[in-house]
Length: 224
Image (cartoon, rainbow, N blue to C red; front, side, top):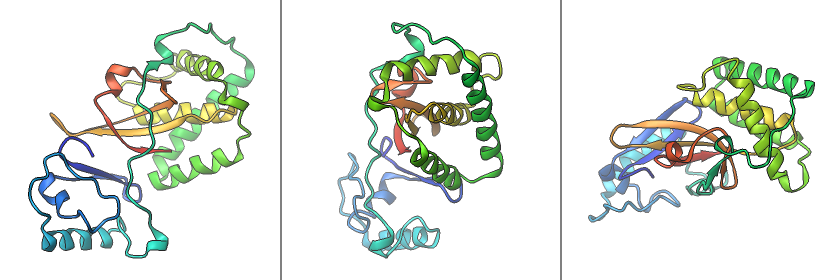
């Protein structure tokens, strides 16, 4: 839920679907877990709700089979408290050959996947990669922050992250997975003053490739 609208990310079609308050309200009671809007004052319109739900069923956004679907719930994303790239209290990690290899592999995979694969496939790929990762005990908070800054230093020589948040986030995610760490990939949206989407990587309350001021205006709608 962003502002007075409900925004969904259609992974199959690689696009967003925004329902304004009057339309979103009509789905209350029809979709398990559907959010209640702060502006809700009228009773849901059953006829409109059925019509909208039918369209979403046709597009595969909803299912009538309980075993094939799940309740609509906000992604479990912690509210960020700090940014790893803005502070370096832990010191810097020395650059090693394995970091360069992981960096090149991560950039290559992110670029190819975003060009030739759907978002649905990419999310599934991230899940597959996570399943193969032997995580470091405790996720090593210091290593996570240091590697995020190391990636940021390498990135500054190869591409500009401005206007490329999705590529930057996916590349950093792949890089950290190569290093045995499992951060969270988040996509958020804002509906005012105009619709915008943004992607970032975080671990717990720590942002790994973004600043608090920029991320704070977005509402998370996906986390992987």
